[in-house]
Image (tube, rainbow over all chains, first blue to last red):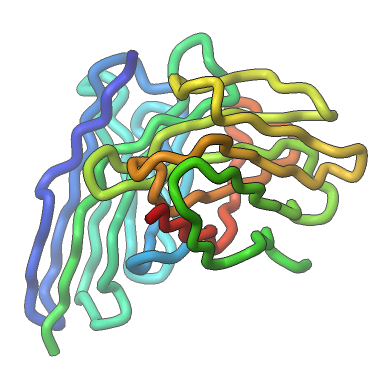
Length: 112
Length: 114
C-alpha cells in the first residue's frame, strides 16, 4: 500500500520566517492534497495538485508537485501565529479512486 | 453552504458497548468517507459510500460498519467497543468521490472508551 512520509515531523519558527514542509510518496502520486488541522478538530482543505510541475498559491502558502520525485512541498512565506497547526498531505492510492492515504502530519509552531 | 456536520461531537462509552456516529455532508455531495485518527496511527481510512453503496473499505475489523441514506447522510457504527477504539472519527464529503474530487471534512466526533 502507499505510504506518505512527511518531513519534518515538527517545526518551530519565529514569526516572519519562511518554512517548507515536504511530503514524499512511496508510489506514484495520483493527486496530492494539503490540509491543515488544529489539534482535535477537523481538517481544513488548503490545496490540491494533480499534475507534475503544478504549483498553486493561496495567500502566503504555496504548494508544488514534483511527479518524478513523487514529492510535494508546502512553503509558507512570512509565517504568522495563525499558520500554526498540523499540516497533512493526502493522496489517492493507485487503483483506489475513493480512498485517501495521509501522512502522519507536520506540527508547526510559530512563536510571536 | 453549510459545511459537513457530525454528531455528537464528544462521546464517552465503556468497553463492550456499541456506538453510532452521524455525518451530514455538504448539500449536493453524494460521497461520504469515514476516517479514524489516533496519535499512533494517524489518519486511517475506514470506508466510503456513494449513493447508498459502499465502494471502498479500509483494513478495520467487522465491528466497524457504516451505511448511507438516500439523502446522502451517513452513519457509522462500532460494536463491542475496545479501549483501542478511542479516537477522533472524521467524516468527509465530496461531490462524487473520485480522483481530483476534493474531500471536505467535518469537525469530528471524539470517542473515548473507558
